[in-house]
Amino acid sequence: MGSSVGATQDASGSELRIGVLAMQGDFAEHIRHLEAVGARAIEVRTLAQLEGCDGLIIPGGESTTIARLLIAFDLMEPLRARIRDGLPVWGTCAGAIMLAKHVPALDRPPIGVMDITVDRNAFGRQIDSFEADLDVTGIEGGPLHAVFIRAPVLRDLGPAVEVLAQLEDGRVVACREGVLLATSFHPELTEDSRFHGLFVRLVREARAHEEQRQVATS
Ligand code: GLN
Image (cartoon, rainbow, N blue to C red; front, side):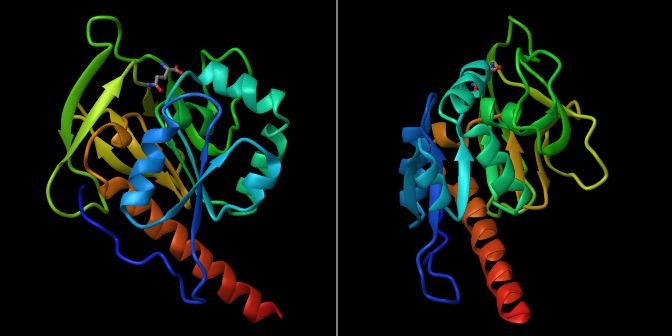
């Protein structure tokens, strides 16, 4: 399945733990890909599970439902706090909607940590779902086959946000702001694990950086 990123031990030798928010949506597919690239994947439904993670994936599904469940499970505020503290997070589709600071058509506030605007269901009824081959910055080995399902579009990117992939018409469908990633599409619904490999590398780098910072300040 796709290319492997090799071992997931960081410099200190301890294993990376990647959480997948498992309230609603296609979290099982993300877990399958994380395990394929050698990461330890954890289903996250509680605060204790969230606290044990070095990084988190928020899956696709229905953003209104995920937002409601985060509030109901008392995870919205702790998750915001951990992200502000530097937790790497990748949101796919509904997960990307949750990360955006501005979502015009969401019935409650998203997590709201990325300086982007996300238009839900931006491709209209005729092409609710489609597929495209995309060049993605940071992913080697040829284009990535991307599956879009009632997908959002990412726009009005802030100055610290980097475009990772665009459709031929220029619309942005993947971007990065520091340790936060947003994709309009679903890498977890293909057999290609390269995007999960990219995220695991980012989490490993973030953790190595944090460990260096702790050594420097101790
Ligand atoms: N349209 C959904 C929403 O707005 C997202 C769809 C998906 O995650 N595939 O939440």
